[in-house]
Image (cartoon, rainbow, N blue to C red; front, side, top):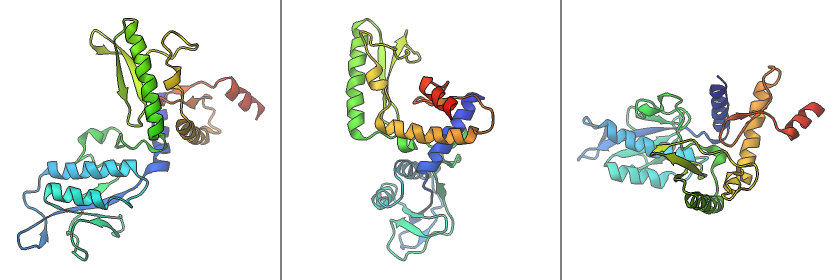
Length: 253
């Protein structure tokens, strides 16, 4: 229950900072130039276009630069692609200006409420995994953390351990140990510097600290007056008990 509660709160934070929603209109152009729905329209083509627009929405705060993406999708799929707001205001269209929209909407593009018909795997929580909101790391942090993770992984290998480095959607690297080909959970970060020091790349960056502060303000507001256990959401989105500084702050308030 606690894990579910934290996941819901995390989702709420993402909703508060990165949601952009639009309606996609997809149609095929016949040889006469009339815009109509293609009778043999495939679900795969719809899903591919929808996925590309979802990816754009997940990584941008608005649709201001989507026109090029819409044109590319239309050319690649030989389809008309038009994007409007939910109230019908045109955002971008691969067809000539003034061309009437198709009679029916093909999909609602919302990375925080994914259409499970086009993305069956999203049925569990309907949040596109690319929608990382304020946790998205800038390039300079990605490069710095990547080098630190590579150094840590190389050190671990020199000690005889098999490790694997992966990068999350936010751009943060993670080094995990593997045993007999089966991925294991990341080993705990040492409290003090060890021969192989993971602290450097496991410490939250300024971007992540700001995002975590915003998230925990939402968590605190939700828990206020409910007698819930004190704590906070960490960088890995798990619930952690309060540290000494947090306890002092709460006792003094």
